[in-house]
Amino acid sequence: MNRTRATPLIGLAVLGFVAGFLLEYGVEAFGRALIIPPITLPLTLLAAAAIVLGFAIPIRRTVTGKRVARIDPFQAMRVVVLAKASSHVGALLTGVGLGAVIYFSTRPVLPALGSMWLAIATCIGAAVLTAAGLVAEHLCTLPKDDDDDAPGRPNDS
Image 1 (spheres, one colour):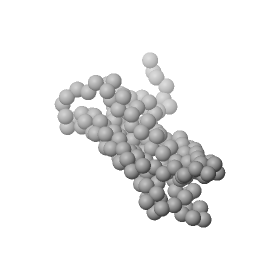
Image 2 (tube, rainbow, N blue to C red):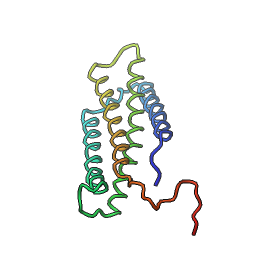
Image 3 (cartoon, one colour):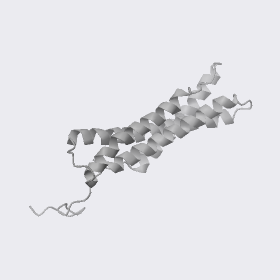
Image 4 (cartoon, one colour):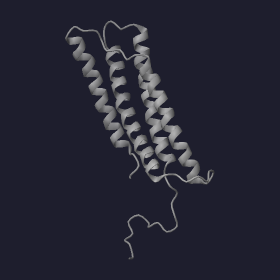
């Protein structure tokens, strides 16, 4: 499995930004109240980031030899997939939150200060989830073996 690159994360953040901005614009165009993220959203994003890191740390300890217990390879793969999904979802939600913040700040009448802080907190929580996913993915990588083929070299067998 390849490591997560910056390109899809940037693309998801831009997609989320456009979606968040247009969603707020569309809601206001129909005369409805703006969508304000609840306080539980950034808290849940931070908790998810902690859980992802909590799953990855025991794998890293085993890989580096600080723990002698065997790790189920399927469990390790699930943690890597969870980390990759967390970084993608975090990038998307960072864009959505940033789109909402920009939309709120471009209005002639600003929403309540609490609404702005909740949208900003959502951006921060989503960015922390993205970073935690990338760190957890790094923690689950195996060190290079001596018998691994160099990239680009054909197999001699």
